[in-house]
Length: 147
Image 1 (cartoon, rainbow, N blue to C red):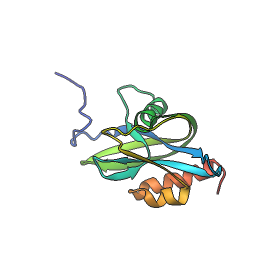
Image 2: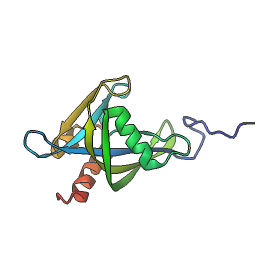
Image 3: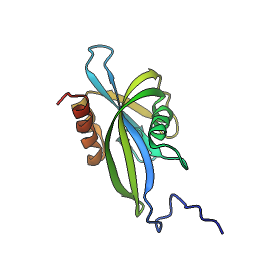
């Protein structure tokens, strides 16, 4: 008898564990702060790069892995940001976030993420699909001491 949990089993009360980053950089043209958003065609939404953790994966390592997979960028992690909790298909999900500066890389569209935008914080906040993701832009500005 297997004791492995199915991450998509709605009857399992254990939260799905995920991690991501609010990825940022300085604009190459004017030096202003830009926040990276990804478009996921499966959901038709704009969000911060994030994803489910692999079994026994360190959350920060998973967040950086997801950033690189979804954006093509390597990132230097910074301060932890608030953990966001919500339900997906009747099952709780917890996403741990970190501020992370993009240090290198190039985006290549793929099946999971077909578009990427670098936007100033107010425009990023407006573009994000989920209100819960907007608070993370504010948290980023606080940890970067820009508020």
